Amino acid sequence: MTEISPEGATPAPAPQNTFKRFLLDILETVGLAVVLFLAINAISARVRVDGYSMRPTLENGEFVLVNRLAYKFGQPERGDIVVFRSLNAPEDLIKRVIGLPGETVRVEAGQLYVNETRLDEPYIAAPPYYAGTWSVPEGYLFVLGDNRNDSSDSHSWGLLPIENVVGKAVLVYWPFSDFMVIQHERAALAAP
Image (cartoon, rainbow, N blue to C red; front, side):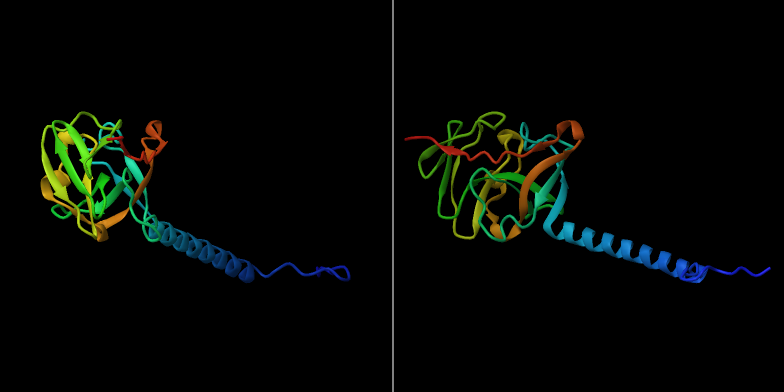
């Protein structure tokens, strides 16, 4: 028996065209996912905190989202938490910016001074036991872990070239119970 379609009705699409459309939809979806993945990785990084050098601000095992574009249009500021390519280790490190280009950093009797003005640091675990003076030339930063006495940082291995900075830490996203936007407390210079 032959079916007769009513006038003006469009015939059902051929099965081959439906399958081609399905494959095209899959390719478009995969292509979009790849583009999004590459774009997200170009502007951000994900870093696992390994160790206790940033306690109490960041804990061992937390995962941090890093803004790779933060310093493409500006410079690091005192108090920023930055991720950078290590000078001595294969993995990236995370520390707080203390000294900026052109400044002198001094640690004496548990107090930190920048250009002879005491730095107020409510975020540190304990005052540092070490002492020293460091001059920060152009193109470099002086970085310290918030856990001053359990951190390998500028006080032990020297100054950080700004070109090694990967980006600015912006939030803790895992474990979800520790989720927080990282407050970039500006380490305040106390009045002399």
